[in-house]
Length: 119
Image 1: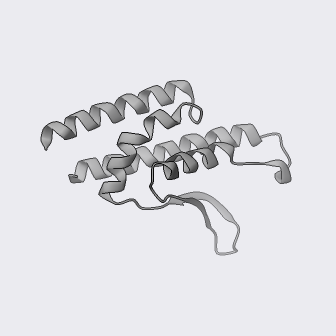
Image 2: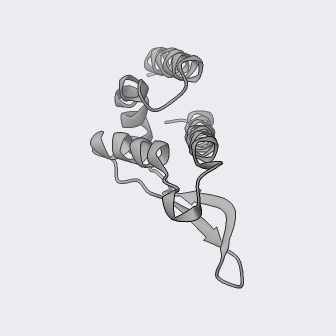
């Protein structure tokens, strides 16, 4: 994979994570802390893992050990990124908002078709 494609997939992954975190935050807005869940984030991680790629997301901690609100995710190798571009889009139907899902699927298809022409 070339450098631009590697960076592109990192940005795409980061944006997917931000999207699901925002969806979870909206669903948890009026719930007490003990009832809050990360259903969308858990679904995204499960979808990525079901592609055969080991992946996790975690919240960074402040010096006092409390959550910072900033998240990190597993750094993926080029081969894992290619697998995600190929296999993840159909698995996003129930995870993302419809308009986001459609754009992500289109971006992945175009990226893969252009990458294949470069090989």
